[in-house]
Amino acid sequence: RFDVQLDKPAGKISPHMWGVFFEDINLGADGGIYAELVKNRSFEFDNPWMGWKKLENTAEGSLLIVNDVKRKGNARSLKVTKESASKMGLQNEGFRGMGVRQGADYEFSLLYKQHTAGLSLRVELLDENDARIGQATLALDNKPDWQSASVKFTAASTTAKAKLNVWIDGAGSAELDMLSLFPTETWKNRPKGLRKDMVQILADMKPGFIRFPGGCIVEGRDLANRFQWKKTVGPIEERELIINRWNTEFKNRLTPDYFQTFGLGFYEYFLLAEDIGAKAVPILNCGMACQFNTGEVVPLEELETYIQDALDLIEFANGATNTTWGKLRADMGHPEPFQLSMLGVGNENWGPQYIERLAAFKKVLNEKHPEIAIIASSGTDPEGERFDFLDQRLRGMQIDIIDEHYYRPPSWFLSGAARYDDYDRNGAKIFAGEYASHTTRPNGPGRSTWEAALSEAAFLTGLERNADVVTMASYAPLFGHVDGWQWSPDLIWVDNLNVYGTPSYQVQKLYSLNKGTDIIPIKRNQQNVVGQDSLYASSVYDEVNKELLIKFVNYNSKAIDATFQIDTKRKIATEGSKLTLANADLDVANSLEEPLKIKPQQAGIKLKGKSLTQTFAPYSFTVIKLPVK
Ligand code: AHR
Image 1 (cartoon, protein in one colour):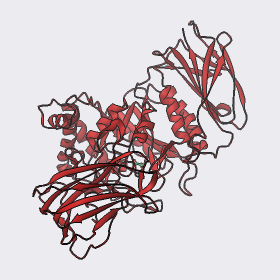
Image 2 (tube, rainbow, N blue to C red; image 1 turned 30 degrees about the vertical axis):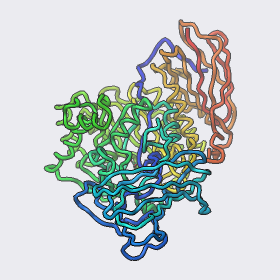
Image 3 (cartoon, helix red, strand yellow; image 1 turned 180 degrees about the vertical axis):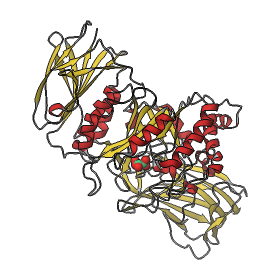
Image 4 (cartoon, rainbow, N blue to C red; image 1 turned 45 degrees about the vertical axis):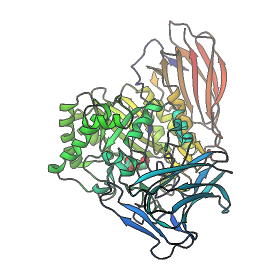
């Protein structure tokens, strides 16, 4: 028997409790949510021909990469010289192919300047068998200055592995750059926008926040390649790309073609957050490169630039339109402020160097922007000791929010359900900023199985019961591309055409959609329910929908009966409902072929007075909803 003390709420739940963690890892941004189909559109990858192949009649010197350092952020372009009307062209392979759909419209665009008049372009889409499935022609004006041109066409069939040919017709000479192909149907149909299905699956979770842009990419493999938000705003063609921190051998996966073009930059991140109703939570580099990589550290005397970046970001997000950065935001299309209220300083950084740099940021930020809460990192927890040590240091510094990361086996998640029960209620709040239950570590990449998800569901009852101190939580990483990932498990998997949520996604979504507003104590034998007989529970009240919500995990191979006694003077409706995720086989997973193998099943329930008895399936997670009058 479980006692649910509805009349004794034990604290408020943050409206931003359940969110998402976005990083350009596993082709999350370039090759993923950023809907650009052309890889290396500006020839700025280390090898300018990466992703491209020359087609017929490209004699020596006819297609040359040229470099004009005066062009901000994008020095290279393709110089075309053609003396006869013969066939000449180049082909782009896309990001593991290009996903195109029958009947959908695509827009090819480029920047160019024509030195000698006479050239025009013909673009065609080919399927995996080299059959043409779309084409268009584009005349080039005879103007010596850089200008843009675009043309739309419709794809005749669907394939995840299309490629793009760009044929150069006529005779003449020109420079071409930013050769680009986008579907016209994007999220909110923004030109050159985001992949609709990938944003939709996030929006479906109604996330309370979106943390961006990572992750280790915030830190970079070295400081020169750290994420610098200022280089990701303004005109797209001027955003200087860098090598992705995940362009590396990681867990035996090699992705040498992984660069960050920043078509998805900080403005677009803020817009995405706004679109899906999530609070924007940016994390900035604190003057330290990834400690799992070079671990380069900026001298304290030179930290000022990094701190200035933070101040300028606040101005970009919230400043008046007559300020330098506020004006840029307005010029980009968003005069209204983005309401930034939290800022992360450092990702998975630790040691005395971190504390020193964090203190320098904090001093200035607190002085100039007391309204901005600072999130500090306590890193990951490989040995289980770093957290406690750093947490104490950070608490001592009066940090507002501490970002804890845990990638641990299911057993850790089960026992971790009690992690915050005796936590200090004074001072810093906790942001469980990255977590995932890893079932097969260290012997190989983890699968996103039901075992992983159910152990997370149990752990999350602990976060929910302690939501007065744990105010934010997000699984990580968010996206994985089946043909180009570095890290697994991930919350959501995609290929070039499809997207599906793992069982962990289903768990996160159920928490997020049923988050409630008040913590309601739930006891078993007068104790918090943390794994006695492998049962885990939490309950909350939702004052908006006037519902009592009980989350219950049966981590047993047998079904069990449980009775909930609602202690309240209020009236409870005699009928409610429940949503259940269940599977007796812990090894099952969702997949592209069976995207909803694990999905919520809805059923009605009946109360007797204020008592509810239910049978819970083996290995199940249930959300019970009871209307309160
Ligand atoms: O989520 C993948 C990586 O895990 C993140 O980039 C990093 O913060 C953590 O180590």
